[in-house]
Length: 222
Image (cartoon, rainbow, N blue to C red; front, top):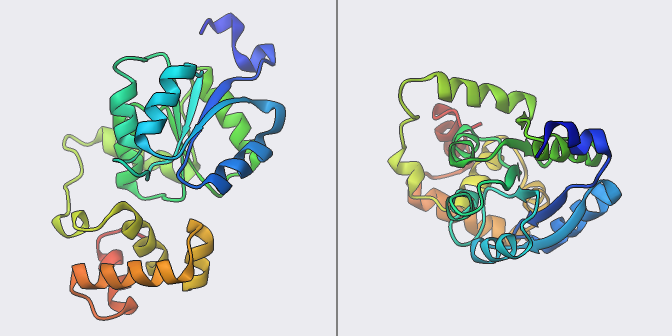
């Protein structure tokens, strides 16, 4: 994109693809963004995201980190080598350091959480489409710390046993969210939350949510 013809300066609407595994959330994002962008496609998993991006060649992809088929990092891995001009802005419920660092290392130009307002999100999209890097304030520190370090963050074998959704549930439960609040935050049922919590406790060999909170806190996941 030429500097003298940026979206911010021209008032043109960036063409975007929304990638998130919750159709209701994608609809909500469309509504919040209004005329600030032109939504040219949507996808709910990795394979469909790669296909839709190749078909529409958007200016920017609004990318969820946790997706069926390998997550946002897999989308970046499969798209950017062939379409390096496409910009990616991660939009996720997760504010965990490993999630932020993972997609930034993969090529995302920004990362914001789903607590962002529609106006703020539209501004972030335009800035990233113009080539800027945009991060929610707390997350910028993760990125600076990670890239200033000589070594990448160590992997945790116990955490690696959990699925991406189980990690999301783990972090929210560890922060003191009730099951109903977790369900609302992640757009899933309370019964599904209960199933995930039981699975997490079993895999980590913990007895209850209090032990789970201590485990997560010790690993700086909350």
